[in-house]
Length: 217
Image (cartoon, rainbow, N blue to C red):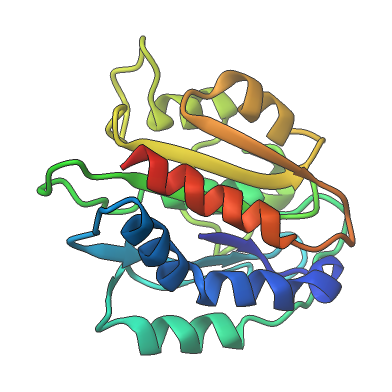
């Protein structure tokens, strides 16, 4: 889960956090209704702001946490996410997405799914932007172009894919703005849930996200 934690999210962050905290129980319930179960659930959270505005906490993240053992750490981290900073309108959402793509995804289990859910109410700074990459805390692993990030996500002609094509899913809760519209149009296995700045995550939208994941397993 990549969660925008900038000041513009102040009105809606609590609802996003509540949805994140109930995600694993709601997913388990949705699976049970379908007569299925999840043998192992791992969750990772990446909170992001803006490297050009808040270098020290532009990215806050957990490791992958295995449930139910990791539930306490997961809840603590999510509850501690606070809306602050942000600077100009675009945020460092692409950096968060890149770190999610590069995460150590499970490779050993059958019928595995690798799902990234990104919540934001803002556009994103272009990858390679000088105001971002020059910051001392900027992750060196992040690609400097959308083309390179797309290759890491993986497509038919990509030899650099980091994610397994049949397993991956990307769910975007983001405004109809760049780069999210292009990603929704061009990236495979991607679903787009348009949002507006200041609007919250509605229950039906989280239900649709849960059902999308459950139906793919």
